[in-house]
Length: 284
Image (cartoon, rainbow, N blue to C red; front, side, top):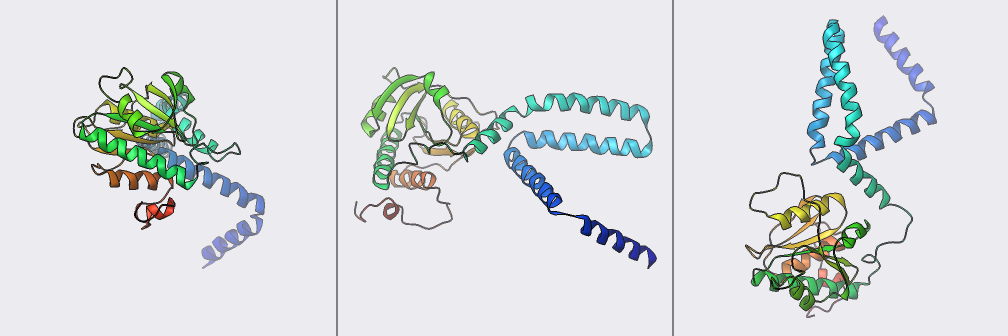
């Protein structure tokens, strides 16, 4: 009973000394850890962190068992790992900083400034182009810029500066066109560049997917862009966003709905009338 009373006294003393600064300190650390784990989710960094935690557990055991040689080896190795961590986690750190920057005070992207009617026209043109290219078994890679700027990828491509239309997209991705290889990047309702080369994803990708799909995943891993990719082998269209590659689509209506959901940030589980949200008539 005395031990329980002593523990209760220690707990009461701790709570009484816990001020608002301590609460703020714990809150900041908790939020930081949450976003760190969120940035690592679905990446190779998770396995690396597990390895580091395993080494720390071994170090704790070695200290408890008083094993000086093991302690010396583990401490030296962990110091080397700590120095290498910024390099190992460079993609994850870059993505986390870019996501943080997306919450900044700079003006919103051209895509977010578009009205519902203009956005609806853009989605219609993209859906029709994807359907037409899929039927002809012509591959396509279309990147829609959002908050994260894609200027570095635009500069390595061919400037276009033209209004988005299904016919223009079909012309660009025609195998006879010198611009068909690479990605088209859209800023709002304008095609700003074609033949842009994107970073390939390092994640484990289904062997049936080729370079286009790996490039779509690569840019979706590093930015908040919405990427529409059409397979030249199957004619299926997919959307890559937020490190994920969506389901295969062959119908124009399915592509339209999927694009609208991603661009309007509507979860798949939410039932909505996409055409009504875009300000269209039921028969439009």
